[in-house]
Image (cartoon, rainbow, N blue to C red; front, top):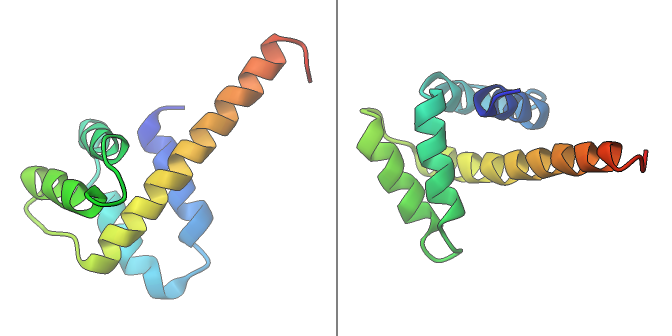
Length: 102
């Protein structure tokens, strides 16, 4: 599964039940491409708690005409965290499968 598909699945898993955030999720997902997502994930990975919002906002604004609102920025950061958790979970599961642990 490519990163964009996994990111979309993660977003739907965590936000589909929240009707109040549907427009925010649709806005974020509709603006993502594989290349843009890679850029944003790189900005997320190379950030700390003090500069994460600034780095995400900067990467988004450099690649997208429409800006993120504060809520959308927070949702995106949460989704990045959940995306990497899911990616690492899949990696651990595969490693265990290869080592005949499961």
